[in-house]
Length: 245
Ligand SMILES: Cc1cc2nc3c(=O)[nH]c(=O)nc-3n(C[C@H](O)[C@H](O)[C@H](O)COP(=O)(O)OP(=O)(O)OC[C@H]3O[C@@H](n4cnc5c(N)ncnc54)[C@H](O)[C@@H]3O)c2cc1C
Ligand SMILES: NC(=O)c1ccc[n+]([C@@H]2O[C@H](COP(=O)([O-])OP(=O)(O)OC[C@H]3O[C@@H](n4cnc5c(N)ncnc54)[C@H](OP(=O)(O)O)[C@@H]3O)[C@@H](O)[C@H]2O)c1
Image (cartoon, rainbow, N blue to C red; front, top):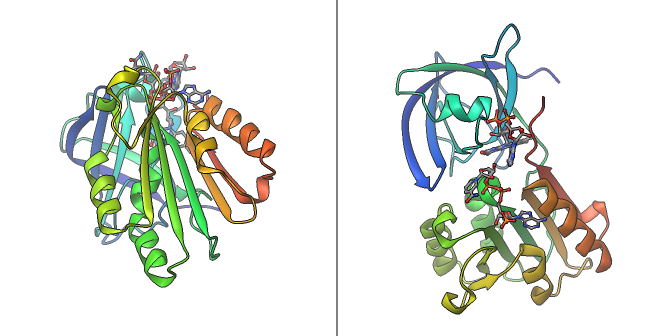
């Protein structure tokens, strides 16, 4: 399906973790930017004769007029990374979208298990408002967010997820660190990859729908683990952050 092309004007940026920049853009000449939480946009990165396409998950917590937010992780010598980490307010770039099927469907699982590594957590930030609505609609609904990073400083939007969990007791937020000192873990933290921690939460294909977003190896390994527990692709939604060259 053809999606509109937008001219994005950079409004502001903020470093939110080592090597992660949160960027806010406005769509030039548009009153609103419509998207479904969980979707992404594709930027056209100037590069030689033909621009390169690079996708970024929309991080907006709600519809904010014509604004689009996302978080970009810096990849060494990456074409888009170099551009996004050097853009200044007022600079422009074109993009198409929104795209993507990592969205909350019209269904009522007993538990949503949301799993992410790195900037893969941003689609879940965008979903919080809808999740809060679904949690309020049914007292039997629960949400587990398992977030994997190397160290605590890389946890994106941690204050927001913790505040959301405090407000919504059936929303559990758990951090998994691949390179942190296990002796320093707090009660809601794990040492190791997300799929190792996942086993403690007894994933059940009869009750759970699982979302996976971020590192492609994490997605393959976690999907394989879920298959051991009886899951099929029917109840596991995946979005791999790989460059389209
Ligand atoms: C649907 C979708 C949504 C995405 N959402 C986001 C998002 O919200 N935030 C975000 O930061 N990224 C996201 N990505 C990844 C993003 O599109 C780019 O691939 C990423 O920013 C790297 O692009 P680049 O041009 O800087 O690097 P490239 O020029 O493509 O790569 C430079 C070198 O680094 C390697 N490389 C590329 N990516 C990685 C990586 N992640 N880890 C290690 N090595 C790598 C390449 O193989 C290459 O050798 C998403 C990808 C997809 C497909
Ligand atoms: N080296 C650094 O300290 C550092 C810091 C920030 C960003 N970067 C670079 O920035 C880019 C993106 O970084 P990112 O942090 O957004 O994403 P990322 O490199 O995909 O890593 C995010 C998390 O996923 C973990 N992971 C890797 N393989 C996994 C698997 N099979 N199963 C489960 N978890 C897995 C990583 O652990 P491990 O990395 O411990 O395996 C890390 O904790 C990469 O190019 C990265 O190299 C590097």
